[in-house]
Image (cartoon, rainbow, N blue to C red; front, top):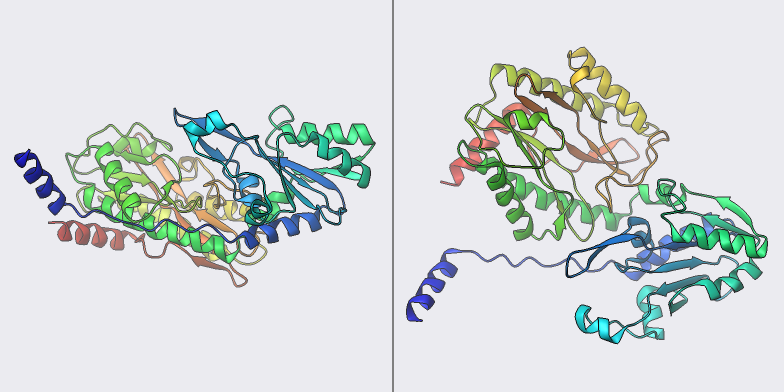
Length: 425
C-alpha cells in the first residue's frame, strides 16, 4: 500500500491535471428571440417542429437535431415545439416526453412541470406527451400550417410533418412549405454563437500545436490523434466536431481517411483534419505537416498551389457573393495551377451547431455566417495530399479570418513545426 501511494503521488506530481471551465448555458432570452423571429416569418401560420436525433451507447447518449436545439437549447428526445402566432397567450408550447420514475433511476431525475420550468425554457407552456390534443385548438384559430422541417428529411423521417399534415386535413388548413426558413435564420450567427465558435477555434489551435510537435517519424497516426484530442479536452473542448482525420503519406490523399493506423515516415506529409467543439458549437481546421520539418520541392509546389487557391477565394469574399461563386473561384485557381482534376470536393461549407451547418449555397452569404475555406489537392500516385482549411465570418465589408492564429503559409508552417518541436524537448 505504501509503495502504491508513493507511485501514485509520483505520477500525480509529474502530470498537470487540466481543470477547464465548462461553458455556461446561453441565456434563455437568446432562444426567445430566435423563436420570435420564426413566429414573425411564419406569416400567421401555425407550425410544429419535433426533436430529431439518435440514442447511442449503453448510457443512451443523445445528440439533438440542430434545428430543434437552435430553437430550444434542449438536448432531449421526443420533444415537440408548437408555434401559434395567432394565439394571444400561448404562442409557444413546448412538449417534453412523459416522466418515468423507474427510468429516471437510470438516467437521472427530470424536473416536474411548473411555472419555473416555463421560465427556464422561456415558453408560454410546458406539457408532457404528444401534442395531438393541443393541436385541436391550433387548428381552430389558424388558417394555415407551415412545414418548416428541412427538405433533406422526408415525411417518413419526420413526425412533425405528419402532425402538420394531419392538422391541415382535419381542419381544412392551407399547407405552406417554408422548408428553408430555419436554414436562412440559422446561417447568420449572433455574437453569442460566434463567441463560442471562436472559443472552439482557440481550443483547436492548441490541438494543432500538439500535432506540430507529434508528427515525427516512427509514431503512428493514432498517436498523433491521441495527442491532439487530449489537447482539445485539456483546453476545455466539450467534444469533437467530427472524427479526427490523420492521414500520412498516401493516406493524406484519401479525403476522409479514418483508420489512423499507419506509422509516419521521414519525408511524409500528414494531413490532419481535426477540430474541437465547444458548448455544442463546431469548428473545422485542416493543416498539412511535413514530418521531416520541411516540404520537398515537389510537395512545396503543390502546397503553394493550394495556398494560392485559398488566397484567391479569400480575396473574392465580399458582400453579395455566394458559396457557388466562391466554388468557381477555387476551381479556376486550381485549373491555372494544373490541379483541377485533383480537387475533388467543395471549397467549403457553413459551420455552426453542426460542422456542416445550415445555409443556402446559391444565395448571397449573409452577414454573420461562418464558413470554411478549404481547397485541397490529392495525388495518390505521388503518395501525398495537401489541404489547408480555415474558417471565416462574413462581415459587412468582407470577412474576418477566425483561424489566423494557426500558421498556414508554407514558410510559417515550417517555422511553427520547428518551434513546437524545439519547445517540447
